[in-house]
Length: 216
Ligand code: ADP
Ligand code: NI
Image (cartoon, rainbow, N blue to C red; front, side):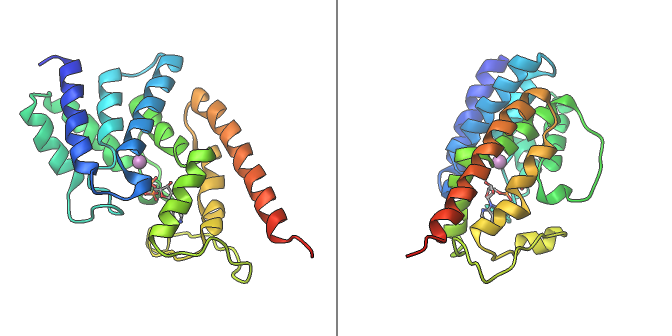
């Protein structure tokens, strides 16, 4: 099997895996991250595109939030072995999967590769801008969280545990995560895209508060 046939098989596998997941984390999220990653690679002209594509496609398999029972890297490793992907490449992909998450890397520093940089940017870009806003409200809604509550002060979460159990409003999520992402982008191409998307979120919040505070 050549690389492009492997990518096709991985697409099929991921589509099937994502079929029953919530709106913010479904196949379309994966497809957008895959496209973002290819876009960044084409601009940056760095990294191994085969690893970037596979890692982008597979990055959310076994994510604690959508599927805590599955050991993502193990499932992915077994599947890629069947496709005869090399052991070295499999371990590179598993490493990207382990390091990509915002939650899992809070307050930690670790060694990085350009492939991780690109796929992580691609994933983070999908959490900001118009799509990021839509995903946040979809996720908050699926958890039964409030849209906004002016009586609850903003909270910033320091630990992974606190972040995961957060039942704060979705507007609060902008302050605990979405507005922080712009400064966590790795590549220059990613930074350019993030800048625009960030400005759009700030404008959204301004309008949101303006409409909330309308005086009769
Ligand atoms: P990551 O995979 O980077 O760790 P998450 O799985 O935490 O990201 O989040 C996936 C999506 O769900 C993102 O778009 C994120 O903004 C959104 N999300 C996560 N937690 C919340 C929350 N408490 N309220 C609203 N949206 C959230
Ligand atoms: Ni993701």
